[in-house]
Image 1 (cartoon, rainbow, N blue to C red):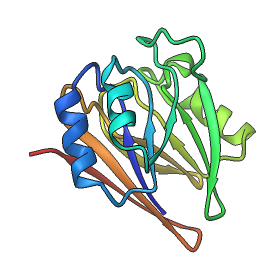
Image 2 (tube, rainbow, N blue to C red):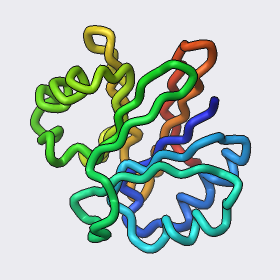
Image 3 (spheres, rainbow, N blue to C red):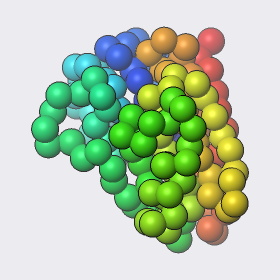
Length: 154
């Protein structure tokens, strides 16, 4: 399963569209919050791709979840923007939440700083800011194994 992870697009349709064009074979796109109208437009343009979206501190849609969970090929994922866990200071609260949910991989944003850290068996993956720094992530899950990669648009 191929998962594209983006966050903090902040209205950048152009960058989001570029990632989608590079990722037409993706099974799932996870947006870790802080979008403006570009997300709705992208979802309309790519109806064959599933989207998982969480609410960021700059999102105002009351229907979006702050945290969501899903399983891909036996791997448990947790996705959140991260602001409610104060990830700009440290990952302690996010780590506690991940362990309460038995997450194997935590996808988050908010800091605009790409990160891929394995800590005590839990992978913390932040794709950075697609809107500002053109960074995003690609995760492939195969036979319960997670291969992750941080990328930057040219």
